[in-house]
Picture 1 (tube, rainbow, N blue to C red):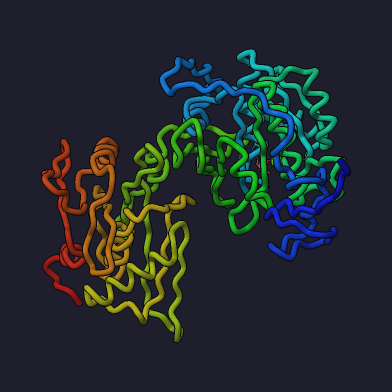
Picture 2: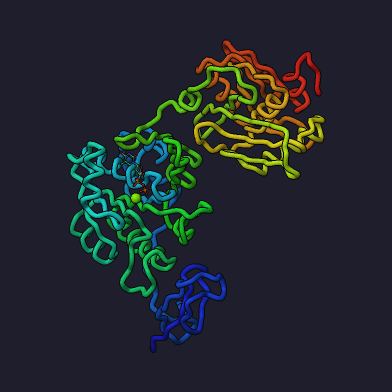
Length: 458
Ligand code: TYD
Ligand code: MG
């Protein structure tokens, strides 16, 4: 049987007659790779060929012992992993350049190394001396982590076969290349090809593979969205440059809950865990300022309180400004429209600024009510009670809808010394929490009346 070539785009799978620099089907550059196929019969068809090996089928109830997880001892990290690293699993850790990916992976590897886990750290970006310098700064130089600066996947796999590692860190996957592919490192084909080879090797040996990947502006890991489905867990490291807080978020995890977050603080000796993020995001609340409220949110499995600030000011511009940091600008536009149409608060001539303090980014619709409270408080120039919290989703008709895990939100707030809450009505539940007075609103208008109080609306 003769061998023939076909040219397959590694990004979308389209087949081409001949090689081209750019795939017509998906527009990706440098993604077309030559593959050999044997001709005769349906390409790749099995009919009339050698029979395959028999596979043994099993029932769902079979006894399988889950292998023990590797626990780093960094609680914030272990929680995001789903309770430690599962042997044989592959993780992708994405984030902006400079956010702290190399730091957290080195910390994790060093901690595991000290517990007797054989760790290999392969850096494609930094020289060994740079990694050593960082380890010294982190106070981790005593850990028996094996270091190498390498980018050729063939060399890496040969060396790993000799090393018998339990954890392999690849920093970063965009610097790795397969010498069998023509395209440059960092291209879709190279990233996917290198990852595939490394994953295959890791699955064979049962090692944990941690792939570090850089993210582009729009929040996707550069080029290889394709990696996300090849790995067992995808973690993103987020944070604002100007703030020292870093959030590690699991967006996919075959061995744990997604949406789980770990909170860290970047210090001069590396990333420290933040065990009680609520207290941290609320630390500077000593004066009465209109437009500032506390939102009781849920991040993953954990309640978290944060401060939302709004500033509404008359605009000198024809089109007033709307600036949002840490929240969705589309949702702000919706809340403003509902306040305008359903509650008669005219905001069209005002600039609106909204900020989630501390550089945190809120994604829950449950923040609607807190945002609305901050806006109303700012327009009315009335500071809200300092010991109050808010949460609830707002609908287009101006209704306030219930949100999940209200009890967890309330008890976290009570624990941190909050004494009042304004929340949606809960069917069949009388909202009482020890030491806290809970007020329910079912229309946004109720909240407006509540804040304006005796003064009446404007
Ligand atoms: P790094 O882990 O190299 O980021 P990434 O791998 O995601 O590109 O982190 C680099 C930043 O972290 C750099 O700006 C310096 C800062 N940093 C500290 O503030 N303290 C430390 O102890 C370390 C190691 C880094
Ligand atoms: Mg790095």
